[in-house]
Amino acid sequence: MKARAHIKVTGRVQGVYYRSTAKEVAVEKRLTGWVRNLPDGSVEIVVEGEKEKIEEFIKWCWKGPPLAIVKNLEVKWEEYKNEFNNFEVRYK
Image 1 (cartoon, one colour):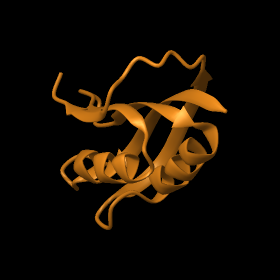
Image 2: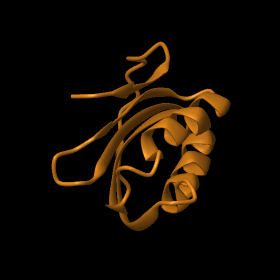
Image 3: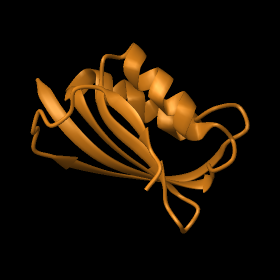
């Protein structure tokens, strides 16, 4: 089943390759969407694809790359929109 999740990751998640590693994991799982840093120091992710793969991706988000210290994850499930062709790092 196709799904969409909006994720906010807080903790030490900027300056530790969180975005680039999230992109690698998402592409590996054949997910689409984007990831970006927010001014408050958190990371925001919108991801679409097979629900099972998104759930695996969310498990990864709790760990992140080796230098990250994830304190919290907010996940909001949304209606699948088939909005993206790939997964990208956004800078705004």
